[in-house]
Structure formats: structure tokens, C-alpha cells
Image 1 (cartoon, rainbow, N blue to C red):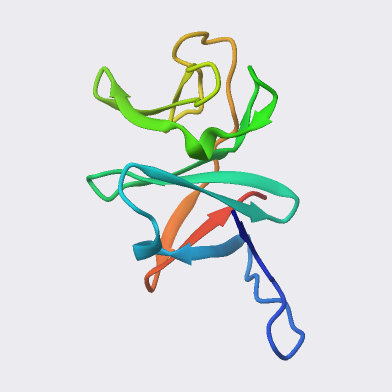
Image 2: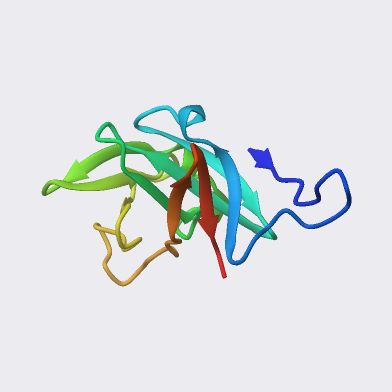
Length: 123
């Protein structure tokens, strides 16, 4: 997990607006997740083979563990998904809805790349 120090060397906050830089785009391996801490929230970020980025809550509501960043990335019906490494429930990377139980969802967050840096907004 990447723990962010949101304080610059001069003591001012580096967080600008709602976006928090979490890592370099090249730090994310395709089809592998990474856990980052943004404020008090654990976020699972993913880069798929086509270069798209996704950010979900890292908490698996079925197991009660913060493990979704370690899940298996795949597709269901052509849509990108991640399967929890605990009990294998599959979540949409786009909507956060559990494909196996649509009544359960994890939060999704806006994610973007600015000058090669991945940024997530949890506000």
C-alpha cells in the first residue's frame, strides 16, 4: 500500500482541489491492483491492458477485509471486473456493483492522469 504524505517540503498541502496524486501511471502494472491511502480511505486502483484506470473502495463487504486491490482482474460480458481474493465475488470496475449479488456495491472514485501522475478524488 502506498501511504501518501500530503505535505510538501515547505509544509504546505500538496493536495490541489479534490484530486490527490497517488502514483506514477507507469507504477501501475496492467491487470494488477494497488492499494493507496487517500485521506482516511483505502482505495484500490487498477490499470487494465487497454490503459484504462479505475478506482474502487478497497474494502470487500463480503469478507470484511481490505483486499480488493489484490483481486483478479477480468471481464464479464466485456465489462472490466475484479474478483475478490477472499470469496471470489466479482465487482464491476466501472460501477462497483457486485456482479454476483447486485444488491451489494463498493464505492467508485474518479481517477485521472495528469502529467504522468495518477490522481484520485474521494471527495
